[in-house]
Amino acid sequence: MMKRRDALRVLAGLPVIAAACRQEPTMTAPTTTMPVIFLAHGAPMLLDDAGWVAELAAWARALPTPRAILMVSAHWDQRPLRIGATTPQPLVYDFTGFPDKYYRLRYASPGAPELAGRVEALLRAGGRSFERSPRGLDHGAYVPLLAMYPAADVPVLQISMPGLDAADLFALGRQLAPLRHDGVLIVGSGFLTHNMREGFQGDRPAGWAIEFDAWAADALGRRDADALIDFQRVAPAATRALPTWEHYAPVLVAAGAAADDAAAVASFPIEGWWSLAPSFSKRSVQFG
Image (tube, rainbow, N blue to C red; front, side, top):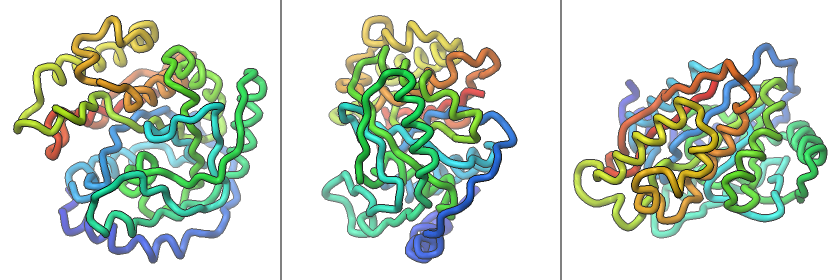
């Protein structure tokens, strides 16, 4: 397991990594259909949690090597759907009041213009409006990527969520599903429980968090699209686990991207609870 000092060494080496990874790679032919994942992304402090960094790193090593990564983060909700920068841009430090070291983080992954073009074609074919944006990666994208792909050598493209309509987010995932056959890793990044008022209290997960997490595990395991979409009505403790639900939304995109693949069994590479916020579930899911 990675020790805390090793995780911090990753942070210390980021400026060097960023300087070394600006060259645009040539994308090679895919060798396998990629899985789809949803991960709990954590605040920037995740990178000080050596255990969680190690879990994410081990997960990345177990995945097929992606040609490119398409990120859907809880921290970008903009309509119509926006396709982010296709060349390296400054990161979006979309948090306040943190130690200075978190504002010095760098993740200069290669741009993904080829992937952007493919996404545009799929959205256009599905009749969905979109626009280009110069926006760089936000912390829902680069924080977990620093743990999973610290060399920043995989092209990354981020798109926005086009609003919080559960059925539409699931449909968006289905539109993007063909990217899996192009060697693209589709990543939803959020939290299955995200109560900023109560989630940091106590030293163990609250009952409402345990209830909702267990329900989500069951619904995801069964790939029950109707339940996942209608979670506000059918899930126990939904309003308490998710007073606002933008952090749940990316799991709908991920589930949609796997919906038409009968062989895409759901598994949970990471489970448990965040030590700094005991009622924040670390549950992450892999389809396929």
